[in-house]
Picture 1 (cartoon, rainbow, N blue to C red):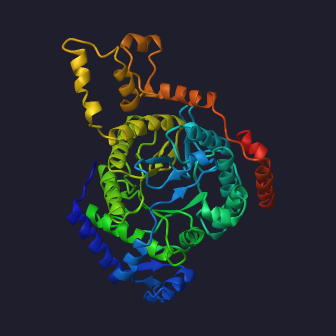
Picture 2 (picture 1 turned 45 degrees about the vertical axis):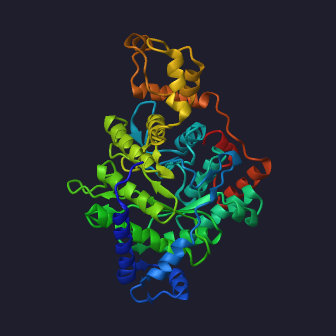
Picture 3 (picture 1 turned 135 degrees about the vertical axis):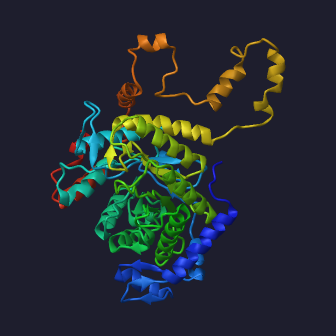
Length: 481
């Protein structure tokens, strides 16, 4: 529905990308990756750790990518298709601040906060991806990632991400997947985790992210390649320039992944934005953020790849700025046909802060954006000519069965927005959207039931935690930390 680039623009960006990859190349800071690329036949400058990528190899790699894969969840009913005409939603990740819904004050998050938010995500019917979306500062550094990953699996049965910090993270994720699926062969057939890779702009791939890219690609798992370039800082200031550089970073990631798999499963992602020249901060609430993101969605479609666009705000609080910036970006992402918006729901301050209250507000924003992106169904039935004949001038449609049917099918019923009269609103306590959002959080968890792990899975997870010398057990994580 929404496009910001025409066919000639897409062709021009594609051509510029191939020129950059062929002449400038990318920095690859990994001996293993350099070895694999050299074996693949690419020219490798070992001294500069620079690899130039000819058009023939780039396009061969891109064309080998799959677009028909699934992302499997712990509960199979929550498994999702990469491309199915719907935008799949997820939260912001590794947030370092938490806005406590009890007093609206920002503080460092705890594991209990993370588990609470993970359960909310699991309970929301329109959210597809769930995990502990913040840094749990009360968990020791040496076990934090492992504990939070397991806490996410204990408290949600939706699709999640594997650890992508280094090779050890990938191996730990594989062990978790083997426990849940039975063995590695079953995990390869039905991957339970996706990797998450951020190329380093401009045009560089660091060894830790390369370990994640190669590790997940080698077991046929999906990998989200999500670029956060800063226009004017780590990328050209022009919107076309940042889209072209971002495209080069994603396509070069595909070439690298193709060294260990015949059919990479890559999700093409963008959270790139301008560098605010007054503050030196990323401007994720800017209109250019959405322009770049929609351009990235179009480039993904150009290559028949699944797409991922973040939705974000620069606000530090749950306020009007957060909502109008996120509503604008959500509309852009979904109207453009993003397959994923995994960095969206609940987060603000350029993905640094998480708020359960914002989570409930974002759920409503997403529902409205999704409904708008579905457009208008026009056919003999919906044109309603016979119905208008039946009701006639000055008639009423209220008693018609067709009215009930079409409302259920075509009209979004709000979970949060107030549409009552002023008198009814006043009788209910004159609650603001923020106050209603807090009530929505209580409603979500009141009747919610977590899908529990099997006893054998609990035992194996506990053994993993003990092997990491963690003080946490599955019983503690099930109780909420």
